Length: 416
Image (tube, rainbow, N blue to C red; front, side):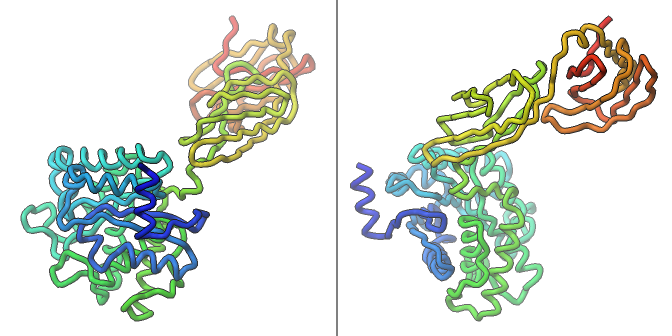
């Protein structure tokens, strides 16, 4: 059935071989999308920047998230292909309504649509179209009766929806607010004070371009019916709004879906490390610890048997691609049995530690669970006793060295 749908889709859009600058996007929304045909404006903008964009849309005037949930055609569109992005937009007012109302009549359906997108392809990303407040707000409720009030509630609601859906947002609303505050001569509204003018649609397209490609729309030769100065201003605003706040809008480039990032914590046992893959869409893990030992666990525990410098590498593979990450670890934890049987480390107050039992201690080093060196103050050192003070509380490890050898222990560590 997917093959039939894909063949039908090819009659309407051209789906190229995707690369870093080639994306496919489905818009599911209403008149805020089809006014001045936002998908086509976005496609023209992207192509003028040398990028490739395949677009399709399912837009019905006044449709809410619930309307789309109840429309089989929406699901047909979702299942046409494995989209890079599916953009979801609710009716212009619904996310700005009272919290409880949004929870019952908006949020469940916005999440249901997102679940359908992920079920169709785990590599598709849902991006909510964060729309804007009406020119004079919505008079039916005091909390949204100005542009700023309504715009703020829409912003908060879409971020909350995106958080619940593990999705991102295209932050058109904040871009509109910036233009209104700083470039009031640019009219973003149509005559009804709600829908976008062409300038508003162009600003939306610039926001989407930066949100999808993670690149600036500046320099795009496509400006539609706008004059060059206005187009440049809108391009700059979109760049600033999106690219300065990628994490705020929860934006992830499609090429990053398979990313893995190695991190580690020192376990309680000397030379033993807990490794983490920090990956979302990885199914196969191939660890090489640099000492001849490998693992296929997602988050393995590994002990290095000898001191040395090791490069720990992870190759992760999943439905959205593969990635490699590595980290270098210096292991210097000679667990000297003679030394461990003699040293006494005791807590003598908040973040104070007394080391005794061994004379002529020549090295003190404290580090945290991530192997980072921690600052400390040496309050007292005599031939047989040393008192150290840490600035912060937490889980720390102490490495000490004497003529007898070297040992690393977890603090607090007390031997009576």
